Length: 349
Image 1: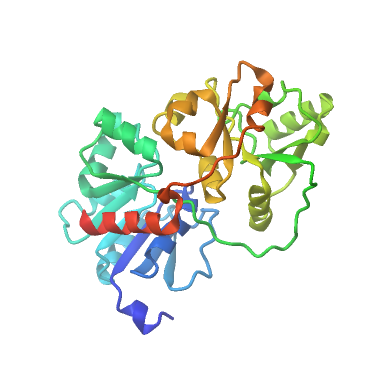
Image 2 (image 1 turned 30 degrees about the vertical axis):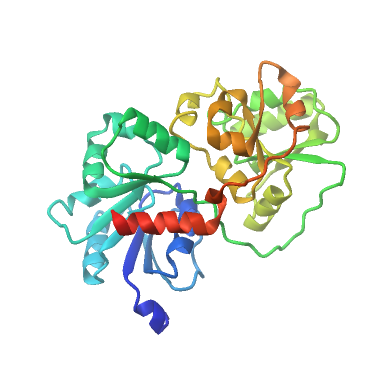
């Protein structure tokens, strides 16, 4: 039950029709919760757990139900919610927005995760027409969209790098002489260059932590190669789902975060211009130094947050961990700065 203070606040809805990117919702809830009555529409297949968050209304969506779009529209109108932020302002919201073709009572914003859609998608052009503004998840993404003049819709960069603090159920142990290099996510070769790790001469005190369930076909293959090379002691692998409190502890205790994005990655050109990986956000959230391939060294954001290595010199990555760790000095890493950026954008557009 909301108290009288929250009942007096204006209303806003956050909508996530898709299964991915829901990790961006919690930061937005934090930005909004003292200023709006929040209704969150979340795909029931999403892995994100938003239960037990006070002063929000959580509604799960069944996207197999063809009437879902109309149900959401009816709810917005009935509850007189006149501001909506789409957590993924792409693809699946197109048909939903068609229901508002002549409706000007509700204002829409959304997070754009794949700016390439602005170049060629007619559906995205309609989405851009209906939105008051796009959020993107990095300054360098905004700069490149603006530079290429991909849309006339106003754009603002935000950092959704604030996560729920979990109760620690099991404390992890890190030996004093160990250096932990954490790679969040399960093994997916189209995302990260895991073969690079298998070509290194790894010092004894280095631990590469693959922070995802290794029990996938690619993961098992990678584990077998690690075993055959005799470097199992240099890796920490997980054979089941990693609980949030354990995941967060490994990030918190990491010395470095390693995205493993290299020029041989099929999405490399996107990552260096207009796409981010969630690995960045984990580094930013815990203010950890990233280890990035030198191609990223020209981007201001990474100059502040990362040390760089050349993949052509296979073991140079170990020189980069000897460099001083980065200090996050910019105001943009602070919660209040991001909250004000977010709130001002949805007020003024």
